[in-house]
Image (cartoon, rainbow, N blue to C red; front, side, top):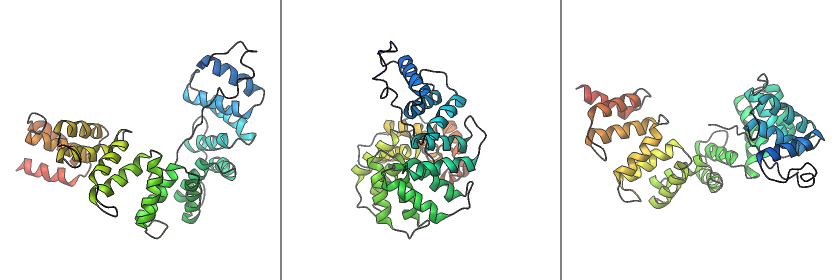
Length: 309
C-alpha cells in the first residue's frame, strides 16, 4: 500500500492584495504572483515563503529548483508553518534537493503533526508502520493513521479501511472497512472507489448492485487507476450493469494494459483470439498472453500452454 502523500496548498495570490499596486503588479499572472510572493517572503511572511517554495517545486512561473524549494520551505517551517514542516519532512524522506535523511524527515513530520497537520500524521503512520528511521511500531502507526483519518484525510481513511478489511493490526471488521472506504470514496479517493465497486459487483459484504459498481469503477478509472479500468472493461465485455459493448471494453482494457495490468493484457489477448471487437489475430493474442504470463498471471500461462499444443 502507498501511504505517503505530498500535500501542497498553493494559494499564492491570497497574501498579495495589500502590496500588488505598490509593486506595479495587479494581474493574477504567474509572473505577478511570483513577484508578490517573493516580496512578502523576503519580508519574512511564512505563508509567502511556503508559496514560493511550492512555486519552485512545481515550476510554476519559475524554473523548477529543488534547492530553492528546500530553502523557502525551511524558512517557513522554522517559523512554525505546519504545511511547510510537512513538506520539508517529505523532501528529506524522498531526498529532494537534499541528502535522504529519515531522522530529519521524522523531526519535521512530528512538528507538523503536533499542530494536527493531517498529511504529517499520515506520513508518521507510514514511517512507524515500515520502521523507517524509527523502530517499527504498528500501534503507533495505527494511532497516526487514525488521527489523520478522523480529520478527513482520504488516504489515511483508505488505509484504515484496508487494515479493517484484512485484519492488519486491528480485528478484522468488514463494516468498518466499508465505513472508512466510503469516507475516502466520497472525497474521490480512487482505490476506495475501486474496492467498494468490487464489493457491489460481487455482492460480498454489500448487497449486489451492478449499477453502483459501474459508477464507482468509472469514477476510479477516470483517475487512471488500472484495476478499475480493467474492471470497467469486464463489465462492458460481459454486459454487467450496462449494455454489452466490446469496443468500450477494449478501450478500458487498453488503458489498463498500458500500465502493465496483467489481467487487462490477458483480456485483450482473449479478444484477439476470438475476434471480439477486433479482427481476429492470434499473433497479437500470443504476444499479449506472454506479457501477462511474464507477470505471473495464471490464466495467461494456461493460454500459452494451449497455444503450444
